[in-house]
Length: 271
Image (cartoon, rainbow, N blue to C red; front, side, top):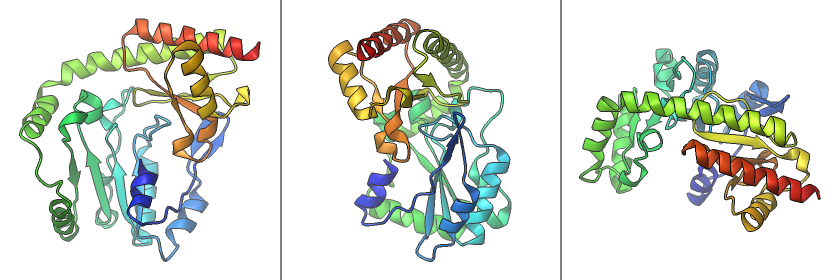
């Protein structure tokens, strides 16, 4: 989505790819600062928790990124749409909570869409501490025709945030159980396929590099041979062609069925 929106608006993407080592991702700090120092770079898009890897960045990481953006006078757009889905006891650090000098360059984007399954209502908001920047953004929102939510969006968002705590607590436990099952099943039954450790979201980021097959081809094969529909990671670029994304926000029996189909697909592939 980030790539297509940026490029669709006639802009050029300069990507600072994460480092992938020992089944973990980390920021390439030297590369990031080099890219931020590029004169043509005016804005950076940051995802926290990260989609697709499902990682909620630490307070130190968020602060460092915000400070680098402020240092080079680059606006930081922080997509925090999965922020309510952290599965550990810690919360995310919203970008708008950093030190004031850095905060002047920050826009945090939030929505109940992912957490409460309200995407169809198009309910979202931008938190912009800098008043001048907020005024410019508000004008742009109305010019783009997205400044007036539909009739149900606002009351639904308020209801979700004010009355959805118990439901969300139960949802998180379901997700923890589903992630644990998927990791344990694949580690035992399909060791060529690995669910990466994550601490947020309901989307499993699964390493299939050991299969030696492009993710798009693998997903097409699974759909045709087993009926299992999962997403290829190619659209995320970087090393996404070696990963698939699996939605675990579903009843346990569907996760069990999906893992069995995935196992059968890999077994048939190896034979």
